[in-house]
Image (cartoon, rainbow, N blue to C red; front, side, top):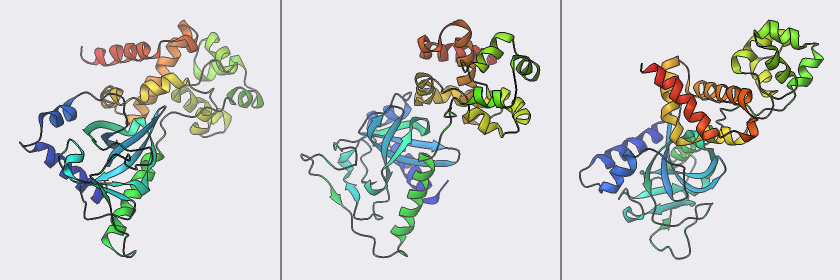
Length: 304
Protein backbone atom coordinates (compact mmCIF):
# COMPACT_ATOMS: atom_id res chain seq x y z
CA UNK A 1 0.00 0.00 0.00
CA UNK A 2 1.43 3.36 -0.93
CA UNK A 3 2.20 5.69 1.98
CA UNK A 4 0.17 8.73 0.80
CA UNK A 5 -2.78 6.49 -0.12
CA UNK A 6 -2.56 4.70 3.21
CA UNK A 7 -2.34 8.00 5.08
CA UNK A 8 -5.43 9.32 3.32
CA UNK A 9 -7.40 6.19 4.06
CA UNK A 10 -6.35 6.01 7.70
CA UNK A 11 -7.33 9.64 8.18
CA UNK A 12 -10.64 8.89 6.54
CA UNK A 13 -11.21 6.01 8.96
CA UNK A 14 -10.29 8.26 11.85
CA UNK A 15 -12.75 10.90 10.63
CA UNK A 16 -15.61 8.43 10.35
CA UNK A 17 -14.83 7.04 13.81
CA UNK A 18 -15.44 10.34 15.58
CA UNK A 19 -18.67 10.73 17.56
CA UNK A 20 -19.42 14.00 15.76
CA UNK A 21 -19.73 12.28 12.39
CA UNK A 22 -23.35 12.43 11.17
CA UNK A 23 -25.28 9.20 11.30
CA UNK A 24 -25.74 9.24 7.50
CA UNK A 25 -21.96 8.91 7.11
CA UNK A 26 -21.89 5.86 9.35
CA UNK A 27 -24.85 4.40 7.48
CA UNK A 28 -23.14 4.91 4.12
CA UNK A 29 -19.93 3.23 5.27
CA UNK A 30 -21.79 0.30 6.88
CA UNK A 31 -24.37 -0.33 4.14
CA UNK A 32 -23.97 -3.07 1.55
CA UNK A 33 -22.49 -1.46 -1.57
CA UNK A 34 -24.76 -0.70 -4.49
CA UNK A 35 -23.81 0.25 -8.03
CA UNK A 36 -21.65 3.38 -8.31
CA UNK A 37 -23.21 6.74 -9.25
CA UNK A 38 -21.70 10.13 -10.06
CA UNK A 39 -21.04 12.26 -6.99
CA UNK A 40 -20.18 9.35 -4.72
CA UNK A 41 -16.84 8.84 -2.96
CA UNK A 42 -15.63 5.24 -2.89
CA UNK A 43 -12.82 3.21 -1.46
CA UNK A 44 -11.01 1.43 -4.31
CA UNK A 45 -9.02 -1.68 -3.38
CA UNK A 46 -6.98 -4.17 -5.40
CA UNK A 47 -4.48 -6.51 -3.76
CA UNK A 48 -2.61 -4.30 -1.27
CA UNK A 49 -3.42 -1.01 -3.00
CA UNK A 50 -6.05 1.26 -1.44
CA UNK A 51 -7.25 4.60 -2.79
CA UNK A 52 -10.17 6.93 -2.13
CA UNK A 53 -11.82 8.13 -5.34
CA UNK A 54 -14.69 10.40 -6.38
CA UNK A 55 -16.91 9.04 -9.15
CA UNK A 56 -17.73 11.65 -11.80
CA UNK A 57 -19.31 9.43 -14.50
CA UNK A 58 -20.41 5.82 -15.03
CA UNK A 59 -19.90 3.98 -18.32
CA UNK A 60 -20.95 0.34 -18.46
CA UNK A 61 -18.75 -1.51 -15.98
CA UNK A 62 -16.27 1.36 -15.62
CA UNK A 63 -16.31 4.72 -13.85
CA UNK A 64 -14.50 7.97 -14.43
CA UNK A 65 -12.91 8.73 -11.06
CA UNK A 66 -10.59 11.23 -9.39
CA UNK A 67 -8.24 10.41 -6.51
CA UNK A 68 -9.39 12.09 -3.31
CA UNK A 69 -7.06 13.16 -0.52
CA UNK A 70 -7.55 14.54 2.96
CA UNK A 71 -3.99 15.89 2.67
CA UNK A 72 -5.16 19.25 1.34
CA UNK A 73 -1.75 20.86 1.87
CA UNK A 74 -0.60 18.94 -1.23
CA UNK A 75 -2.10 20.03 -4.55
CA UNK A 76 -1.39 21.27 -8.07
CA UNK A 77 -3.14 23.78 -10.33
CA UNK A 78 -5.71 21.16 -11.41
CA UNK A 79 -6.57 20.05 -7.90
CA UNK A 80 -10.07 20.99 -6.75
CA UNK A 81 -10.02 22.01 -3.08
CA UNK A 82 -13.38 21.60 -1.36
CA UNK A 83 -14.44 22.77 2.10
CA UNK A 84 -15.71 20.40 4.78
CA UNK A 85 -19.33 21.17 3.89
CA UNK A 86 -18.86 19.84 0.33
CA UNK A 87 -19.29 16.20 1.35
CA UNK A 88 -20.93 14.14 4.05
CA UNK A 89 -17.48 13.50 5.55
CA UNK A 90 -17.36 17.04 6.95
CA UNK A 91 -13.65 17.13 6.08
CA UNK A 92 -11.79 19.38 3.60
CA UNK A 93 -10.95 17.40 0.47
CA UNK A 94 -8.50 17.63 -2.41
CA UNK A 95 -9.76 16.18 -5.70
CA UNK A 96 -6.92 15.62 -8.17
CA UNK A 97 -8.75 16.34 -11.42
CA UNK A 98 -5.56 16.06 -13.47
CA UNK A 99 -5.39 12.37 -12.51
CA UNK A 100 -8.90 11.47 -13.69
CA UNK A 101 -8.92 7.80 -14.72
CA UNK A 102 -11.28 5.17 -16.04
CA UNK A 103 -11.51 2.47 -13.38
CA UNK A 104 -13.26 -0.91 -13.67
CA UNK A 105 -16.13 -1.53 -11.27
CA UNK A 106 -14.35 -4.54 -9.80
CA UNK A 107 -11.85 -2.35 -7.90
CA UNK A 108 -14.62 -0.44 -6.10
CA UNK A 109 -14.99 -1.78 -2.59
CA UNK A 110 -17.34 0.42 -0.59
CA UNK A 111 -18.98 3.83 -0.83
CA UNK A 112 -17.77 6.10 1.97
CA UNK A 113 -19.33 9.48 1.26
CA UNK A 114 -21.40 11.70 -1.02
CA UNK A 115 -20.36 15.01 -2.58
CA UNK A 116 -22.74 17.96 -2.45
CA UNK A 117 -20.86 19.83 -5.21
CA UNK A 118 -22.01 18.68 -8.68
CA UNK A 119 -19.09 17.76 -10.95
CA UNK A 120 -18.92 17.03 -14.67
CA UNK A 121 -17.13 13.94 -16.02
CA UNK A 122 -13.74 15.70 -15.89
CA UNK A 123 -14.24 16.88 -12.32
CA UNK A 124 -15.11 20.51 -13.05
CA UNK A 125 -17.73 22.01 -10.68
CA UNK A 126 -21.13 22.98 -12.03
CA UNK A 127 -21.55 26.70 -12.87
CA UNK A 128 -23.79 27.11 -9.82
CA UNK A 129 -21.11 25.82 -7.43
CA UNK A 130 -19.31 28.47 -5.37
CA UNK A 131 -17.66 26.78 -2.39
CA UNK A 132 -14.42 25.62 -3.95
CA UNK A 133 -11.03 26.78 -5.19
CA UNK A 134 -8.18 25.35 -7.24
CA UNK A 135 -4.73 24.62 -5.87
CA UNK A 136 -1.44 26.20 -6.80
CA UNK A 137 1.12 24.87 -9.29
CA UNK A 138 3.74 22.54 -7.84
CA UNK A 139 6.86 24.70 -7.45
CA UNK A 140 9.42 22.05 -8.44
CA UNK A 141 9.87 18.36 -9.17
CA UNK A 142 11.55 17.97 -5.81
CA UNK A 143 8.63 19.37 -3.82
CA UNK A 144 6.65 17.08 -1.51
CA UNK A 145 3.53 17.78 -3.54
CA UNK A 146 5.27 16.41 -6.64
CA UNK A 147 6.15 13.16 -4.87
CA UNK A 148 2.64 12.90 -3.45
CA UNK A 149 1.13 13.40 -6.91
CA UNK A 150 3.45 10.80 -8.45
CA UNK A 151 2.34 8.17 -5.94
CA UNK A 152 -1.31 8.97 -6.60
CA UNK A 153 -0.69 8.72 -10.36
CA UNK A 154 0.99 5.31 -9.98
CA UNK A 155 -1.89 4.07 -7.85
CA UNK A 156 -4.50 5.21 -10.37
CA UNK A 157 -2.52 3.64 -13.23
CA UNK A 158 -2.49 0.33 -11.38
CA UNK A 159 -6.23 0.45 -10.66
CA UNK A 160 -6.94 1.39 -14.28
CA UNK A 161 -5.02 -1.63 -15.57
CA UNK A 162 -7.00 -4.21 -13.57
CA UNK A 163 -8.74 -6.75 -15.80
CA UNK A 164 -10.08 -9.95 -14.32
CA UNK A 165 -12.07 -11.40 -17.27
CA UNK A 166 -10.10 -12.71 -20.29
CA UNK A 167 -11.09 -10.60 -23.33
CA UNK A 168 -11.81 -13.51 -25.70
CA UNK A 169 -10.74 -13.14 -29.34
CA UNK A 170 -12.87 -16.05 -30.60
CA UNK A 171 -9.85 -17.69 -32.27
CA UNK A 172 -9.88 -20.89 -30.20
CA UNK A 173 -11.53 -23.01 -32.91
CA UNK A 174 -8.90 -21.86 -35.42
CA UNK A 175 -6.07 -22.62 -32.99
CA UNK A 176 -7.43 -26.11 -32.32
CA UNK A 177 -7.82 -26.79 -36.03
CA UNK A 178 -4.29 -25.59 -36.76
CA UNK A 179 -2.96 -28.02 -34.15
CA UNK A 180 -5.05 -30.84 -35.64
CA UNK A 181 -7.15 -31.37 -32.52
CA UNK A 182 -10.62 -32.83 -32.93
CA UNK A 183 -13.41 -33.96 -30.59
CA UNK A 184 -11.64 -37.16 -29.58
CA UNK A 185 -8.50 -35.23 -28.62
CA UNK A 186 -10.44 -32.80 -26.44
CA UNK A 187 -12.32 -35.66 -24.77
CA UNK A 188 -9.01 -37.39 -24.03
CA UNK A 189 -7.06 -34.37 -22.79
CA UNK A 190 -9.85 -32.64 -20.91
CA UNK A 191 -11.97 -35.61 -19.74
CA UNK A 192 -15.15 -33.92 -20.98
CA UNK A 193 -18.36 -35.15 -22.56
CA UNK A 194 -18.57 -35.36 -26.38
CA UNK A 195 -21.25 -32.65 -26.41
CA UNK A 196 -18.94 -30.22 -24.61
CA UNK A 197 -16.03 -31.08 -26.90
CA UNK A 198 -18.17 -30.24 -29.93
CA UNK A 199 -19.34 -27.00 -28.31
CA UNK A 200 -15.72 -25.95 -27.71
CA UNK A 201 -14.75 -26.76 -31.30
CA UNK A 202 -17.72 -24.78 -32.60
CA UNK A 203 -16.86 -21.77 -30.39
CA UNK A 204 -20.17 -22.12 -28.54
CA UNK A 205 -18.60 -22.25 -25.09
CA UNK A 206 -15.25 -21.22 -23.61
CA UNK A 207 -12.63 -23.35 -21.95
CA UNK A 208 -12.43 -22.92 -18.19
CA UNK A 209 -9.10 -21.85 -16.65
CA UNK A 210 -8.59 -25.45 -15.48
CA UNK A 211 -9.23 -26.82 -18.98
CA UNK A 212 -6.99 -24.17 -20.52
CA UNK A 213 -4.24 -25.29 -18.14
CA UNK A 214 -4.62 -28.89 -19.30
CA UNK A 215 -4.65 -27.97 -22.98
CA UNK A 216 -1.88 -25.35 -22.94
CA UNK A 217 1.02 -27.87 -23.06
CA UNK A 218 -0.69 -29.73 -25.91
CA UNK A 219 -1.07 -26.50 -27.88
CA UNK A 220 2.37 -25.23 -26.93
CA UNK A 221 0.88 -21.97 -25.66
CA UNK A 222 0.78 -20.15 -22.31
CA UNK A 223 -2.44 -20.66 -20.35
CA UNK A 224 -3.25 -16.95 -20.68
CA UNK A 225 -3.06 -17.15 -24.47
CA UNK A 226 -5.42 -20.13 -24.52
CA UNK A 227 -7.96 -18.27 -22.37
CA UNK A 228 -7.59 -15.16 -24.53
CA UNK A 229 -8.55 -17.23 -27.59
CA UNK A 230 -11.90 -18.20 -26.03
CA UNK A 231 -15.17 -16.90 -27.48
CA UNK A 232 -16.04 -13.45 -26.10
CA UNK A 233 -17.66 -13.72 -22.68
CA UNK A 234 -21.24 -12.45 -22.22
CA UNK A 235 -21.06 -8.76 -21.33
CA UNK A 236 -23.99 -9.02 -18.91
CA UNK A 237 -22.34 -11.84 -16.97
CA UNK A 238 -19.03 -9.97 -16.71
CA UNK A 239 -21.00 -6.91 -15.63
CA UNK A 240 -22.83 -8.85 -12.91
CA UNK A 241 -19.64 -10.28 -11.43
CA UNK A 242 -17.93 -6.87 -11.58
CA UNK A 243 -20.55 -5.20 -9.38
CA UNK A 244 -19.27 -4.07 -5.97
CA UNK A 245 -22.19 -5.86 -4.34
CA UNK A 246 -20.69 -9.21 -5.44
CA UNK A 247 -17.33 -8.58 -3.83
CA UNK A 248 -18.23 -9.94 -0.40
CA UNK A 249 -19.33 -13.23 -1.99
CA UNK A 250 -16.23 -13.40 -4.18
CA UNK A 251 -13.92 -12.77 -1.22
CA UNK A 252 -15.69 -15.47 0.75
CA UNK A 253 -15.26 -17.90 -2.15
CA UNK A 254 -11.57 -16.96 -2.43
CA UNK A 255 -11.12 -17.63 1.29
CA UNK A 256 -12.85 -21.01 1.07
CA UNK A 257 -10.89 -22.13 -1.99
CA UNK A 258 -7.55 -20.63 -0.98
CA UNK A 259 -7.31 -18.63 -4.19
CA UNK A 260 -6.83 -14.99 -5.15
CA UNK A 261 -9.87 -12.76 -5.53
CA UNK A 262 -9.66 -12.52 -9.32
CA UNK A 263 -9.28 -16.34 -9.56
CA UNK A 264 -12.42 -16.78 -7.48
CA UNK A 265 -14.25 -14.33 -9.70
CA UNK A 266 -13.19 -16.32 -12.76
CA UNK A 267 -14.32 -19.53 -11.09
CA UNK A 268 -17.76 -18.05 -10.55
CA UNK A 269 -17.91 -16.79 -14.13
CA UNK A 270 -16.92 -20.00 -15.90
CA UNK A 271 -18.99 -22.25 -13.64
CA UNK A 272 -22.06 -20.07 -14.15
CA UNK A 273 -21.47 -19.93 -17.90
CA UNK A 274 -20.95 -23.69 -18.21
CA UNK A 275 -24.18 -24.46 -16.38
CA UNK A 276 -26.14 -21.99 -18.47
CA UNK A 277 -24.70 -23.43 -21.70
CA UNK A 278 -26.03 -26.87 -20.74
CA UNK A 279 -29.50 -25.62 -19.93
CA UNK A 280 -30.24 -22.73 -22.29
CA UNK A 281 -28.78 -20.32 -24.78
CA UNK A 282 -26.32 -18.08 -22.93
CA UNK A 283 -27.75 -15.02 -24.66
CA UNK A 284 -31.10 -15.73 -23.00
CA UNK A 285 -29.77 -16.47 -19.52
CA UNK A 286 -30.87 -14.51 -16.48
CA UNK A 287 -27.33 -13.83 -15.31
CA UNK A 288 -28.11 -12.18 -11.95
CA UNK A 289 -30.26 -15.17 -11.00
CA UNK A 290 -27.61 -17.58 -12.28
CA UNK A 291 -24.89 -15.90 -10.24
CA UNK A 292 -27.14 -15.88 -7.17
CA UNK A 293 -27.64 -19.62 -7.61
CA UNK A 294 -23.89 -20.25 -7.94
CA UNK A 295 -23.09 -18.46 -4.69
CA UNK A 296 -26.06 -20.00 -2.89
CA UNK A 297 -24.75 -23.46 -3.73
CA UNK A 298 -21.04 -22.91 -3.18
CA UNK A 299 -21.16 -20.63 -0.16
CA UNK A 300 -24.17 -22.39 1.31
CA UNK A 301 -22.45 -25.76 1.17
CA UNK A 302 -19.45 -24.30 3.00
CA UNK A 303 -21.62 -23.41 5.93
CA UNK A 304 -23.12 -26.87 6.30
